[in-house]
Length: 211
Image (cartoon, rainbow, N blue to C red; front, side, top):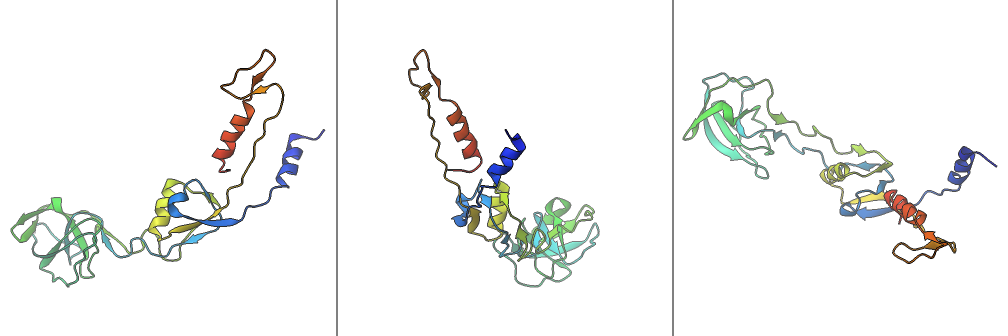
């Protein structure tokens, strides 16, 4: 007889690593990433507004300051012109921040009258601007091996990855033998039992990613 540890070692010595295959991102959840994947796009790809509000050129405006609203930037629709110190743009969360904008004042801190806004509350320390590449940059990698979770799938999507290298699922055949075994739902005789182990093994193997 050998120990359980020795038996497991002998079994694992027989394991052959499955080859890599590429699957669409929508089919990658629960699969094992077999090699690192590198971002093809930075996130965010541009400086982006973190709040709904108004973009201004000052980093430290004071209560009572006023600006003329001269344009708007929304998610998917940037503002391409340059604004002056006495000007502001309406800007929404996720919108590209023009180079001339140095702070986004949240909309709750201003009072707007027609096309003019007035700062009514001292702004906080944060500029409310997410820097380009603040989450990750082009070339940053997701390490492998790992079982891909829903959060990993979202990350891969934001990295502009459409097909993912994963380990091919092993195919396993389960054969339950024995005169004493009867399939669940059957009608066992007085000397028979239900074939339960193969169903438990099937669930364990499926949970581990096997077919």
